[in-house]
Amino acid sequence: ADKQTTRDAIEELGTALRREKLERSVVEGALETARKDLARVMREVMALQRTQQAQETGAQPRAANAA
Image (cartoon, rainbow, N blue to C red):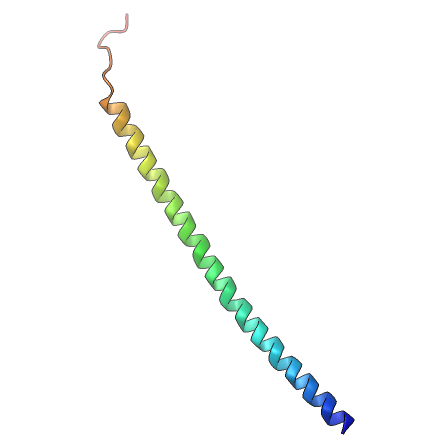
């Protein structure tokens, strides 16, 4: 009876460990996706900022002759 109880406990722990590994895998995948999305958004923001700065710089009047 003790051996069977021990085997059952080991089996339950193995099942719990597999479940935890699966959940961790899912979370790590979601984290990687979120990181990629953040990087993409940051690149888009930087591109928009550069475009806006270029437009603002081009719209400012400049002296034809600074001398």
